Length: 429
Ligand code: S3P
Image (cartoon, rainbow, N blue to C red):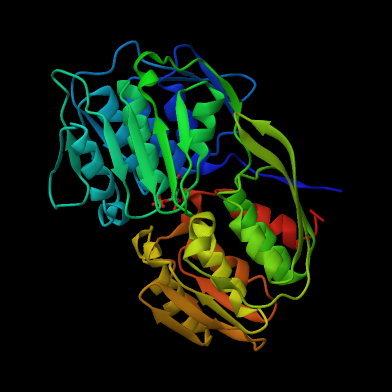
């Protein structure tokens, strides 16, 4: 059976580029995506003195700098929150000066969530225009080590957790992060596979605690090779398109980390036949195949407990809810208001434009499924996941949608339109 393979996972790619920039020898990365977000991390690291050498076999060799820059560099993070937050952690750790900025959307997103814990470690970070917002300035650390940090985060956020862990790793300082629920743990898996002194502390509830122990003081990150697993969040758009149009879909070589596969679990609990199989592990990351046999499905019940593992798939679940049997309820999703757009508002306004019955609350949505023909204009608000989710809904022959800015898919998934076309033309069973 023909199957689709996807470019590397965005979250893993940012982390692989950053870890390779700290490794003691040249690293080789394969299957990096051509997405604008990952390019932003790569360009920023290059401006900081990291060397990138594309090899003939399409892999990328990454060579860490002998010493970090001492003159302040201007870093543009584009639309990428992960670039801005992870690099703030990395730069705090290495103690090098920089100014970080982003596009209009990124400038409207909160930075205190990483700046505050990093300042508590001794990071010298200041806001240049508005409190809690980019642009920010990081001053060089003139003397001394960073302070040990035990941080209790208010929200489950992999960006916050990773920023603190990277600051600890790069400065050889013990750090501990507690989060109310386990967010994506790619950095932890990679660090564990590379022998870092990482301890996942047991907790008595659904919260999660991870620590880089004091042994980090003399830990040296070894060189590594990694083929980045396919992006499960990109795969989810194709699976949803298969579901909407009744076409089977098979995806191979895709990341199946349980902190990312909530979308597949929710589809299953709504009656969808979907199989997943882990066939290998790469630097601790489970990788394998997903196979969809499309059929009817009921509405979704999505609560705070599901949120970390479906965080980026909520726009997709909300558009699938339109063709689900019955009502979908999404709660505990307040964090979605702080993404590339206010995703709850963007979903509500667009679904209403199509004539779907929607209720919007402070932290969620309620959506009535319907089998009526629907049509209307869609505003993406410059948000790649909103644009792609509605493009998937548009695959339904009884829905007619005009997305104002489909091109913003390039932020995470530049091949989206071509892959969707392959699914629709039946080239991929
Ligand atoms: C990401 C973490 C999530 C997610 C984002 C990527 C990451 O954000 O929404 O697309 O790679 O760390 P939060 O950390 O804000 O939850």
